[in-house]
Length: 359
Ligand SMILES: O=C(CO)COP(=O)(O)O
Ligand SMILES: O=C[C@H](O)COP(=O)(O)O
Ligand SMILES: [Zn+2]
Ligand SMILES: [Zn+2]
Image (cartoon, rainbow, N blue to C red):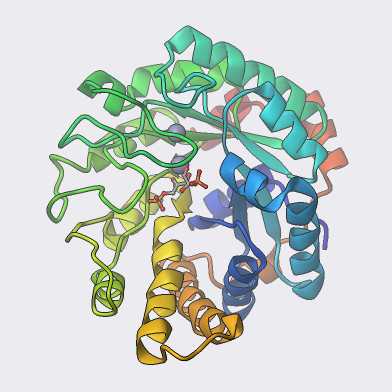
């Protein structure tokens, strides 16, 4: 099956009221485990590659890997998405390598560390959207800077994360500005900031409305009912995975992520794409640690990777079920990118029209 675009997939999700997890991939085992869960639950899926993933695996490897996953699982619509693109060149090279969707993260400058101003963000996102839409690819923009409302800081991921202290006006997306941003950039999906951050150390306690600002999502959705919202930093950092790691020699300090119930609430308020990487990393690493502790003589990597994949598949299955993604794969007929390009050119996918339709 041809890969699906983010726009078509999220339009379907909006029409049927579900959310789609976007899992980060870097290697074959992650891909096999995630798509297995999608096939088992009849769910469409977004596989996203960061710039770090692209340099780790290589663009050619990633493209062929995802094509192979699609060929092996003909019933699963798969979207291949660039996570946190930092400029036009990153986004264009992703599309050239078979990605059907790109994120232009103009909330930060090209270094992915320096918060950018609004005009820069609008200009660069609109430019990427114009180019991507011309070939039918989808675009996610970001307004607001990811970071903790407790500390004012973003976590240091490999590839992206603001440096220095952020204030509340940066950490929480402004709903009125969101309307202007979507109309001017014509992005297909909007990543918002509501107090989540990348990595395992999101909250020092079970989050409440003070530190996880779900009301911001609600306010944006009220003003932009036709726009697909994206939650980054949406790992729930489950206690059972912290325990699995720590009971097998790990030393992860106690931490809290985004509760799955909050994501379910977000999905009822227009969240359509839910970014998850850390939970997947923890699932695999927890099993690596367990095997290494229980069987120190083991040296066949497959003996580590098989339980690691099983743990990841179980995690993904749970998210497909809880986000309502399960059961929808077989109802989707993929629209080719060339046809999407025609629809963009005709203006039918313009956010102004989506807003009119949703009203
Ligand atoms: O937002 C993400 C990728 O863009 C991943 O977030 P987590 O670190 O919470 O998994
Ligand atoms: O954006 C954050 C994702 O978790 C990807 O992380 P990465 O840049 O280390 O691959
Ligand atoms: Zn970001
Ligand atoms: Zn992210």
